[in-house]
Image 1 (cartoon, rainbow, N blue to C red):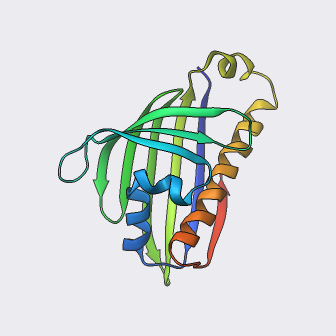
Image 2: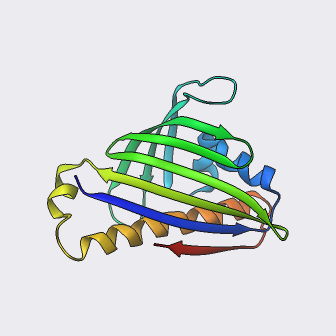
Length: 162
């Protein structure tokens, strides 16, 4: 299976609790994150949300949807949220948040493998890695724009880290 590790950083001029609440409320993502087409709750977690499972469908700049289930495996409000993905993408997504000079710094690490046959088949081609990276980062830039709007039009910046 082709594997990828994407790292992005959002810097948002908003309180950490508000940013964390927006990220944690995955079922509301389609309201503010244009690349998220649907989120369906499949299972509730414990009182901390551990064990909760949602099925998400994303569409980035490339003309195909990606659907996967995400199970929450760790949650430390308001600084950490981790989930394990299964489905068309498999791996781990980890959100970490911290305060820095009036900003909330959000770091997202998405370490995944593709499971779709056609994606695995084209993975060895030299340009594919960068195309998938560009698509991921377009989705994450959409997320930053959306969360900024959700939090009242606050300022924010995006950094692609690799």
